[in-house]
Length: 223
Image 1 (cartoon, rainbow, N blue to C red):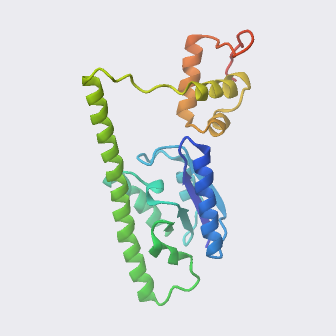
Image 2: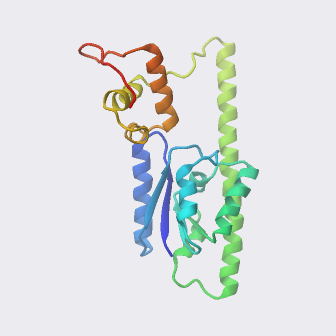
């Protein structure tokens, strides 16, 4: 059995590092090592996650996917979760989540007789479904509260929209347009999604050259 770590990173590289260290420590405590890492910068509400799809393709029957929390794997709606769950089941992969203690037994060399293994599999499946549903509900509740807050602010004339992170955008432009970093490398170094890099660079091209803090404007070109 090989164990693969899956991380769905936020825009903060520090958060991804913290989660990765937590998974490493957990594996060590169970006498295991992580064979490979797969990190997505996409939302858990979409199936368009290249690294997760690559993981599902690379893994063999009997392997395990190690995650910090179930919501790192899925915030999908019911239909999306059923599709993902079927892919995992068809590959005969185990999901081991730090927030689901019963799933930790999948890392044990001896679990018990066939009946015990079947019962654990059924219990874990039920709990996994429940936590996935809770993760989706939490996401929808937060989106609803956010929308209500925006509506209230608009009604009171206080809404100004999302303020762009000027410092982050400057870093993206410097990495991609000035130093010619690849799309993937720019996204990784800046701690953002590839779509954010594309959007910021497209906006920069439309607005023309952006002068540095000190000195003349820098000629921008996309390799």
